[in-house]
Image (cartoon, rainbow, N blue to C red):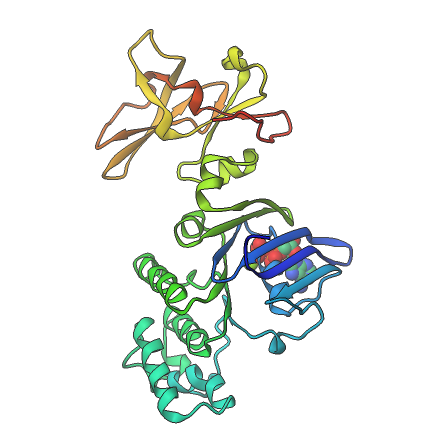
Length: 341
Ligand code: ADP
Ligand code: MG
């Protein structure tokens, strides 16, 4: 195999009293990669991460880390660090003590400990908070302490479950970049759970999109965006999501059941020259572009992206045009058909 597989899940399943958790999980995570587990709430992201961590045991399948079968090993024997939604800090210890706790346990010397502490606090914006107790911090600050603790652990594999969900939008964007830079600098392998497709697409080398306990598609972000494997992926990835058009409206494409179309591939046509006649539902101005939301009886999610500021009154008739090559073709079961754009 070409990729250097650092983590491998083979046909892994986890059920609770026969109820579905995750099923048929086959996944290879390359060494040094930043992999995002993405999907809606309840799709099995955390379960998959906890199986890798050793916090859950699979009902079926095998898990290997760095060539070693770890399927039945406890979390402590897997050489990994974790950052979870809940901070799991020691309430009676200070920020500094919480961050270096693991290093102390491993008897790392004071000088090295302080160096690592300083760097981790700097990265997470916590310099000056060394002496505070968790109770004296905001939720966002506590989450950064948990991040700092994972950073100083220096393990080759770091598992993160929605670590930024308690941070405000601005801080989230900057910590995102910090995590990404850190992962690259340290050559860490990161598995990162998020329900936020923007976060997954912007941070990850590979995205694993899950739904209903199954992997729907796995690959580089651009694969999921430009070649969605099915209509679920098409509608989950991208902002705005891909529009889906019933082929009844475009009978020349009768070989497919539905056609996918992205906002940037849609043009506004001269009256009488367009392929579909729509009405304007709303205009969303984003600065560099405006998303014009359109209504058509045979389509969901039709949007045209126009540069700069454009305003159309709700109910205005707009004809749209697009190239056949821009259409994504899906069958009646929602699976991508060969020869799609
Ligand atoms: P996600 O992290 O994507 O939101 P989870 O992995 O937490 O989803 O959950 C996947 C499914 O497994 C859900 O249906 C959830 O209710 C179920 N599940 C998760 N943990 C448990 C548990 N400890 N006991 C019973 N069911 C669980
Ligand atoms: Mg979860």
